[in-house]
Image 1 (cartoon, rainbow, N blue to C red):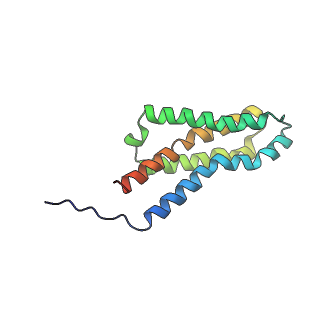
Image 2 (cartoon, one colour):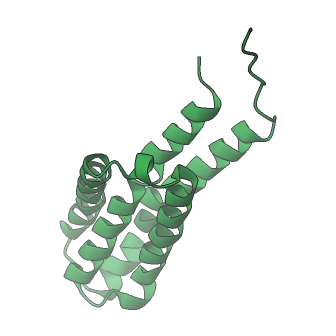
Image 3 (cartoon, rainbow, N blue to C red):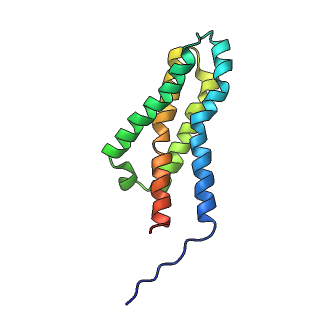
Length: 133
């Protein structure tokens, strides 16, 4: 018996692309408010580089944790993606309200990076499950 595979619905690829774009925009959205944070918290010039690095370090740590725990295999990838996107957005948005000093901002940006590990790699896993070769 021949196994036939059906093509994925046409809406899947645009939905995946938009979701990945929206989710990973958290990486750069914080950069848009960094000059205002710098002014309001009276941060020195080098603080901006620290804040950018905090996201990257958070992403690396998150990727290691997600991979070590095999979260995308143990939990529904769609649910994991959704939760990380919502929590990442909340961490990013809380910069406006909770950022009282450089350490709080660094922590929130690192947390955003950590949660991005549940967006980009997990989103690629979802895409691969729809579009296998």
